[in-house]
Length: 65
Image 1 (spheres, helix red, strand yellow):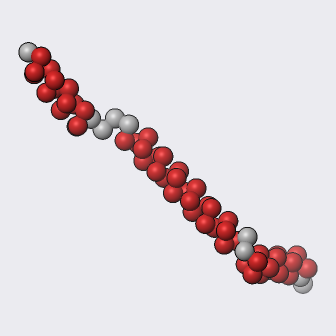
Image 2: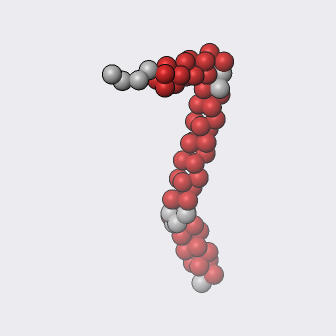
Image 3: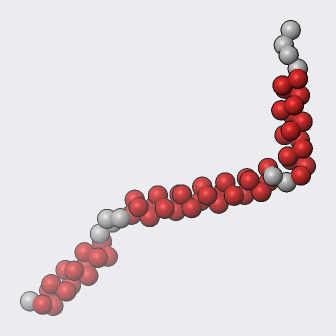
């Protein structure tokens, strides 16, 4: 009887997918944070920062018409 209960418990542990969505959200959040960090490093580099500043300044100084 105890052996059957142990087998049933082990089977449930291996086949139960409860909590999978939590892991998926955690991995997605980790990937998003890594991508944000990589983009921050690229955008904060000197040449990219200068180019973005130039584009924004040009857009603000040029008026339509």
